[in-house]
Length: 294
Image (cartoon, rainbow, N blue to C red; front, side, top):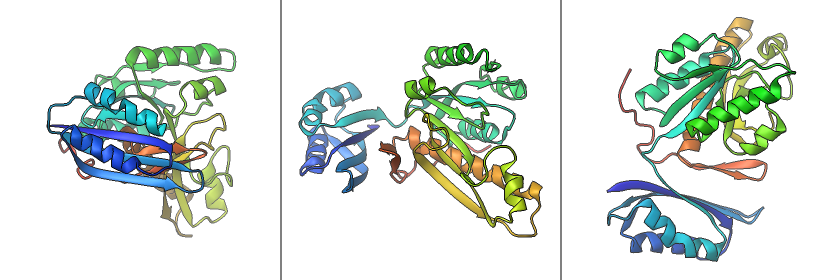
């Protein structure tokens, strides 16, 4: 038996769930987990189904057989193998907490991704990365060479077959062209103070204002910089007794956790872009299990 998943989005109407479940049953597939959401405000319907193929049907057979149903309901439909790891490229500058967290989670199987390469505009983490047999590319970015630098970055994405770019505190603004080309396939992480504390040293600004909650936001990247559809957020409480350095350390922990959860949701097909926001379904049973410890 093989574990597959189906994700669909389409205009809301009667009969969608019945059509999907009937199709899977007719193909000797057993549904193990299912989530759905009907957005009455936009008229959009979203559904994700995990199932086992118990009759030997593969992905190509299922895709071809489902075609008439997708056409009937005007669906965007995707079948995929839940056990196949998605290829990811991580981009990082000089803050390494998210990169190191993702390297560890990938290594133990807690995050079902294959890190195809790491791209940076600095050399700080080259040894850390290449010691794990992952290619490391240092591409300097200046106002004068930005177009060539992004062309080189995109060449690496295409050559590696990466499906997702993760900005793990990559401190360069991507061009509108790159954002459009990789729409829905670039995930960013930043602090959750926006729009209050922009620019350099946001935690210092928050400390000086006596902020009591600090947090992080992970979202898809759009041309609107830090205003793309939000995937995951979290917060942690701080008090007057914490120092500026405490704010930074606690903020790093929240950023790493939020980014990994956002990637986990994306690679499992749990996230749907719904206009300027997202629909994020709960994780299927067993999807957080690690292959090994340490």
